Length: 171
Image (tube, rainbow, N blue to C red; front, top):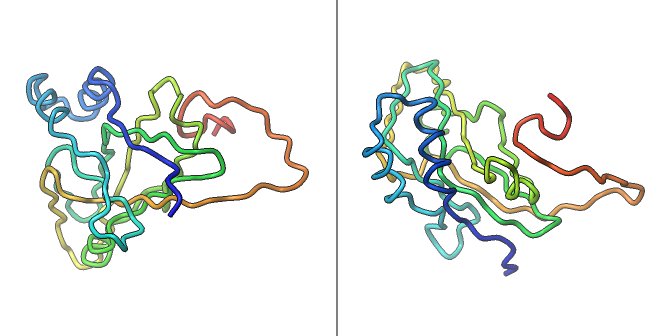
C-alpha cells in the first residue's frame, strides 16, 4: 500500500475564526475545547478505503437544511494524488445527505494555501422522506479517499494556488 499523505490540525486561531464565522453561538472556551478534541481522519478497518472525517461539534439538519462545517483538518498529499470527499455511506443511504459540490476535491497544493488548507465540508439534508439528520460531536459524517491521477502529455500548467474554491479559475 502506498503511503502518500498525512492529516494535521489547522492552527487553533484558524479553527477559532472559522467556527466563529458560521457558528457565533459558541464561546471561545467552547471552540477551544472543540479544537482540543478534534480527531484526525482515520480508517475504521484494515480494508477501508475511506478516511472518516469526524464532526467537530454536534449538528442536526432538517429536510432541506444546509451546513458548512470547518473540520479543523488539513492534509499534506504527495503530487499526483488527490483526496476526494463524500458523505459517509450510511448517512447518504438513510437520509440522502449530500455534499453541495457532489464530491469534494482536495488537491495536493491546497495544503500550503493562506487558509492553511483548512478543509470545509458543506452538506445538505436532501431527504424526500422528512427525516432529520442528527450527528453527535466526534461522529464520522464524511469520508475521504485518496486517488492517484495522471495528466495529459501536453499539459503545461504552472499556476500557483492560494486559496480554496475558485482559486484556480476565478469561479
